[in-house]
Length: 428
Ligand SMILES: *Cc1c(COP(=O)(O)O)cnc(C)c1O
Image (cartoon, rainbow, N blue to C red):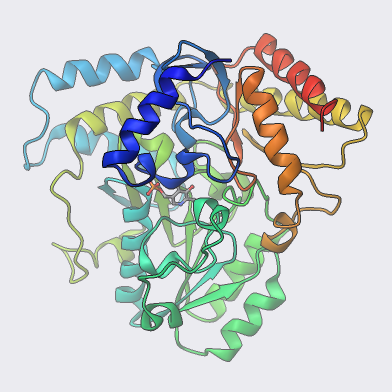
């Protein structure tokens, strides 16, 4: 494939944007080579600036559950834009999407909209601290909750990819209030709680981790976390920025039958526009300004274009009874096909999957937490990534990311992907 135009665009961008990108993982640093500039996308495909077509497994890092340029979303945004794009006043559509979200997700009475997943998680933690009057938080190594200071302690995703888990600029004072636990290890969480009695405001977790590849929780791990939180008056925060409206209408809470105290959303809830949200029962949400004392605000929060996109997206999900079954079937089909060809060519690997999230790890051991995820062979991943790209398959340019399966993928697309994996496997 030719990337002339992308190379030229990247060069120009680097002069005026740090590293040429507005979010680090896009720069391809972990895999080398020139990042591809997107030109347009439709359904399961993304087209780059040179006119190359790719079957897309990134899908804007999650939002495009139903495919790119999904007509109900595009139409809703266009119609809304004609009425003005922002008012700084409340609008009716904010209540409409809030009512729908509250009806779809278990155990929430109220929801507050923000502009990104980062904002949602950061505000959720502030609310948990305000509600409990306690200061420390527990997060899990390899889980990513956005780039706010308190979370940049062994965060997954781009932060791990660049080997700078603790970013300069995060103060020691902030870091000391974030305790680090091991995903899927309840004993480790229990001992952290016991060593910090009455100091922990909340435990925040990706209920299915998606920022160190896809790592589902072990049997009962979420239930055990719930029990520990109840026993110690700790709020449980599910960061469902990735899993919300993706694993089920009600997200991981519904799928695993475990209620969180605060739930964070992003990605799918905005249908591809910048939206985040956090939600909880009244007793917690009523602590938020202007009802309560915990301050949180945003000039563009609840923006009508973003709400229109989100409402069209959630409405489509709500009205589609078979969606999650179709997504899971497609993901299972891809899993089986990839495993067969990788086994045939004796490539050491582990595939993790939950719902429409799947990741291939080039490692021998089971991948259950950050340290096992980090054991994957990165050189093999790099070759795999570039091989797939050359075959017209766009997966995330980092071994620490999940693939996102969209409903727009046909079985022909999946077969083409499996054939590409077979072709690439022969070169690994
Ligand atoms: C993407 C992501 C975030 C951050 O969302 P942004 O919109 O990028 O700020 C937070 N948590 C999880 C689980 C995510 O996947």
